[in-house]
Length: 400
View (cartoon, rainbow, N blue to C red):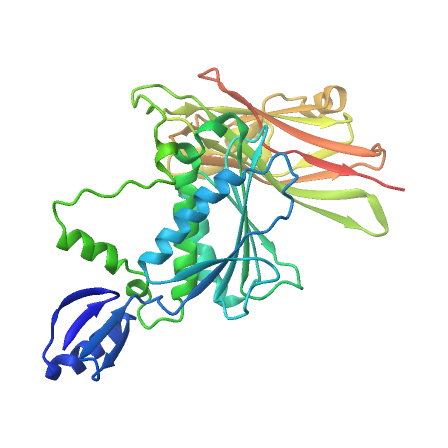
């Protein structure tokens, strides 16, 4: 019998060996069908029965920050990756989807001023079965220096809908693909393949790109085809690998808890995370928390006074660890200037891609706070010229 993988003839298979092949493909999560009338055995990728609808929506097309060209690049990368595993994609609108799609995907890309790292925001219907693919995406996003955020999908949306919002810094907008796009496409494709493969007998082989591999094996001298969608974005000059890059980013992760009986006296539980985004080691980050209006927020947490650093600090295998206030009269300075200065207890080095953080801080807004309270963070590295402001700030506004 003639053996085909998709539309490619692989060879002739004795009929007596068909059950062996059938069981083998079934165990790998591949699709296999035997047609004795046509003397044909058809093998397809593990996701060949999957259909993905990609929204071509006009939502927020008037938003000047939205970049449709970058959206098309990401979507085309997703289409090509899914096609290698046999999945089919089609462009749909809110009115034309057929309700037989395994996944409804929407991708919006925004070029945002003043942020320092790309952000991938996922809107989906949370459920225990969603954990694996979301966990994989978060892990890969963290490795790629992409901030990852999860949001609950609106209740009126179809359960198979996944909406993705990508936000990237404006300063590198002209080189989106080289700087951010390929990393974002990699993270997104991994997550979607994991989600579509989760019910397959063999998760790994269901998403395996057999067709691309066969092209490589059967045509060893054939040069890879250029990608017309991406080739224009790949012509930017490469960065000299010896160039010294000193850069960092920081952001707040926080929760605000307010009692109904005393809404103007909320508590803020927060952490400030700092990441080395350059290619050389950064040493001793010094943090300045600026409170506005001054004297309206008190700070507690795992930060010790300078004189108690050796006795109250966390003791590790390499000595004392943790953070301390820079000044003995830090509380008075906070009341007078609105600034609180914090530094590591002992030398703290951040290798490229490494992160650290001021964690488990508790900020309490005092009763005499104005109509708005704001907390900003500024980070200075003592051994270099790197000075940064956190990507976000904590801001509370009171409405009577």
